[in-house]
Length: 279
Image 1 (cartoon, rainbow, N blue to C red):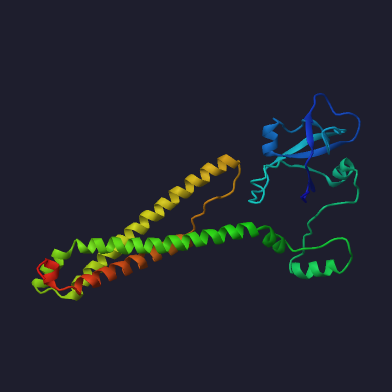
Image 2: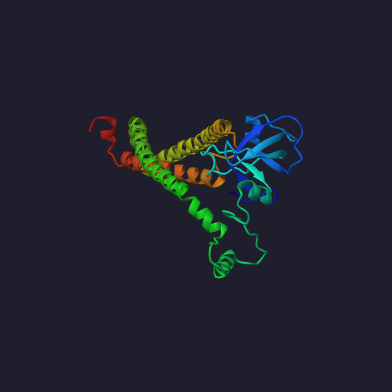
C-alpha cells in the first residue's frame, strides 16, 4: 500500500465494470491509474464492483479520477496497476480498520528528518520510522550495483580505446616517414615536425570528440523513444549531461594528444636515413 494526499492508499484488487447507477449502499470514490484505465477502457463516472479477491466483489466504486503516477524505476518492471482510495473506504473494504502497512509524514521547514525519526521511534513500539533518504538509499541498492557495473565497463572501454587510439596514431605517423625524412634533410628542426604532428593529432581528437558527442545524443534519444513507448512511461533511460560531454571531450583530447605525442616522438627520434629506408 502507498500513501497519497487525496487517495491515501493503493488497493491491489479485482475490478468488474457493471452498468446502471450505483446502489443505495455506500459507494467509494476511486482514482484509477491511467494505464489500467486504458486497459479496461474506463472513464470518469464508471461504476465498478471492487473487493480484495475475485470471489468477494461486494462493494461498489465510482471512478472519480484518472491519474498519471510519477515515474518510478523500481516499479517499471513489476507491471503492476494501482487504484487509489480514501483510507476509510479501503479499511472497510479490507475489514481491517485502524491498520496500515506504511504511511508518510510531512515535516515543517527546519525539522531534521533523522531527528524526527529518532524522536518518533522512542515514543512507542509496533512501528519503525525511517527518513525518506534512508528508504531511497535502501531501495536503490540494485541501481547502485548496476551503476558500478557500468562504471567498470566504462573503464575497460576507455583503456581499450586508448590502446586502439595509440595503435592508430602510430600507423598514421608511420605513413609520414618519407615526409619527415625530407623535412629533416632540408633542415626542418625536430621540434617543428613534432609540433606539426601533435597539432594534427589534437585536431583529429577534437573532431572525433564532437562526432562522438553527436552520436551519443542520437543514441540516447533513440533509446528513450523506444523504451518509453515499450514501458509506457515518462522515465529517462539515457541521459547525456553537459558534465558527461565535457568529460568525454577532455578525455578524448588528452588521449589523442598523448597518443600523437608518443607517435611523433618515436618518429622524430628516428634517423632520417632510416626513415628514407636507406639506413
